[in-house]
Image (cartoon, rainbow, N blue to C red):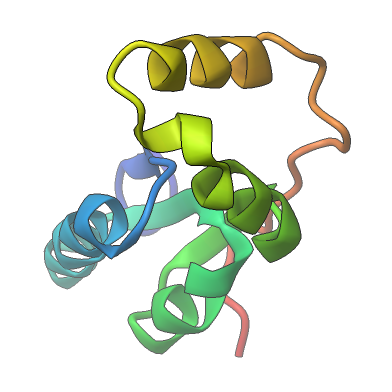
Amino acid sequence: MTETGPHAILATFGTDGDVVPYLGLGAALRRRGHEVTLATVDRYRPAAKQLGLAFASLMSDAEADAVFGHSDMWHPTRGPRMLAAWGGRPHPRPVRHSRRASP
């Protein structure tokens, strides 16, 4: 436990339909005194900051655009294979976050 209570790390990768529920969950946990870090695509950093959540980048906006913009992503059989291949590669940069929300 930290000074503010347990620390929840909410990690997701996707679009609004995947991330927005985690923002809501993170906000509810913060109201209950938990420390919360949202780990996802860079474009959600401002929303996390607005809710008082710490943020950890899982991928840049350019990386997300490349994955979600690829035609195979939405194919019923090629999409899962593409994501598995993408997820199995070494992460291009270390995931870094601050345990404190940015001011």
